[in-house]
Image (cartoon, helix red, strand yellow):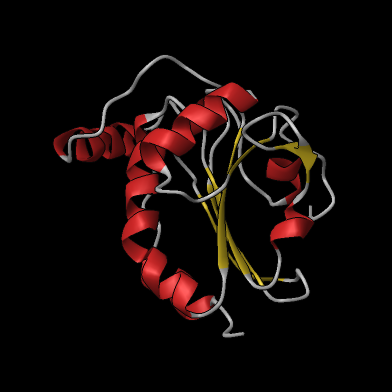
Length: 168
């Protein structure tokens, strides 16, 4: 996963290896997704705790670099946003994908939660069947924690994420 080719928000090739030491990698479905906007707001509200431990935070989505740039400006609060158009990093991180991850009662309930919180869906900007999650990597890039969305918009336990971040 660390060396999987990704693109930064201006289209320059990079990988997660340049963000390791320790890191929280936030996988978002696609850049127009209301759940991804909700997740970005949650990340930003916990970023001080994560960054205070010396970790880096990076978002990874399936859309194109221009979509990542727009998401970064509007939702990521200065945190880096990378594009994984091949979804290879998603697969290596164990993220789910498929119709039945979207067409579920849980996804409908999650949508209501996100809408009531003020998050809105725009046009699809990436793979709508891809689900997200969060992984925490230690300073060597080894996986120390993972939460995978079973349905679109599943809630992340941020207390567990923050506690899993190893201090530098």
